[in-house]
Image (cartoon, rainbow, N blue to C red; front, top):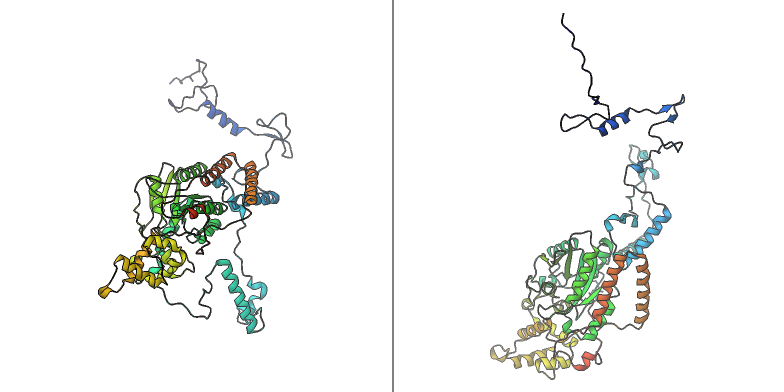
Length: 531
């Protein structure tokens, strides 16, 4: 007979059962269970003691001190949702709306704030057809044809209602109304395509690419006519659809304007947006340090981003590329004293945290005449078929003493007489000694666009500047008490940079203005061009 194998007895005293906590379970050697795994498996097998009705009497995981520690099941424990009361929601909307209304306030960590709660999204309105008429009367084989329900009784009231709705639409969306000279219902002659430069779909596409890619938008203005080279359409678009982007106004070519006029425009425009004066020059610039410090403050505020992008937009020939070259102290963008040199947008690295974006010049829709378009520098003078047509407006805008000093002509009757005398002095004559009026007109327009002829629009004078400044300071103090410390410090730093620049001496080109004009005593009010 075969002897039965005796069962081996654990003599060593070491536990070998798979559910024993004290056994040597080294997963790396034999793949045994660890003590933590054993405790977890035992926890699954524990059952609470219940009475005959099914109520739990005791449980190993139940606290001995509290009678019932069962957690009520709720979806809020498993999702990222929060419940907000109506009063708290209204308070949040009021506070956030007041902060967003000011262009000097900056909201930190926008991605973590429920910005969608600021406005109620209008749900798509459903047309309840069956509430007005049953289906059989409207669509079935027994449908009935009824007269349409109109809100008017006759054609006259219908026409009045249509006119009223059209006026309301134009006021809301800023549609172009009848221009002066079109009151009789006739259209103007079709303009030449050169007067529509900067308005093509390609240029507007480049502009919106720059806006979408930028965290800070710098609108470059001509200091000689800031309101004429300003884009209100762009500012409205940023306020309505891009509230997280910040706008800065930059008055370039401040060396072509007296210092008191530059400081006046800084005081006026700073009430709406942070405004800085600038003179673009690689060697002798003005405002470079102030602009860099403001951009650094914005980069600190956008700490959640690795780097910020700053886009430069504005009219053609206002100096956007020159400003970027000044900030880099290097010719990185192609510049020229003629409009339309920049064709496409381009990225330029300023620092590790700040990128600059150059944009082509964009002309915004306005009621400007052809002469206004030429004098704003939109059109290249060499492409004009007859430049002498626009000289009359130049003689109206520029003081007589400046023209005498520039062209050595003391007296003239009209623009034609002025051009004839200029042709004789400069030797611009055709065959037979006839004056070349077109060439002389192009000479004057070249000098106008390059700043050799002094011209500027004086800032408006306000009497209640002190009261407005005091109110602004008190409002800033209240905001600083509520806002985050970092945002308040950055906003204060930006305001200090802007206010300190208004106290600096703005450089002006020599022999461009008289002493009385530099002091502001002989400043005559000029008619500003509106865009």
